[in-house]
Image (cartoon, rainbow, N blue to C red; front, side, top):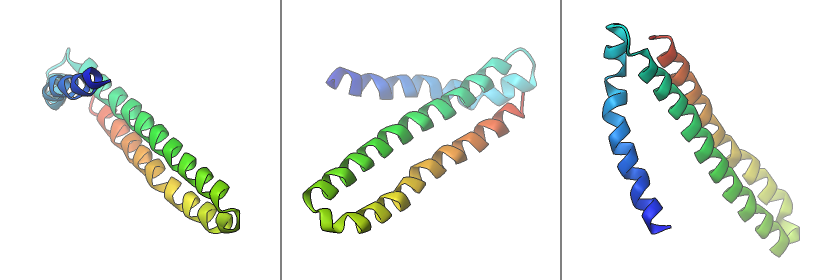
Length: 104
């Protein structure tokens, strides 16, 4: 697991410079695939992070409700509100990906 924690930031550092110049490559023609790659990575990583975050949030809420059933209503309300935040980040990434694809 520790190797994976080291590998993911290293891969991100390798991809970021190429994605930063994706627009200039697309403008010159022949490099539009990098913009598509950037848009796909934006959506994929946002959905992955959102799914992991929402799963942890729901797990914590369910264990809290199991420990204290009388507080289930308040926990449920807070959970529904908290689930909106990661979901909104995914929607923002979706909008950014659509804007990136408009540059091809």
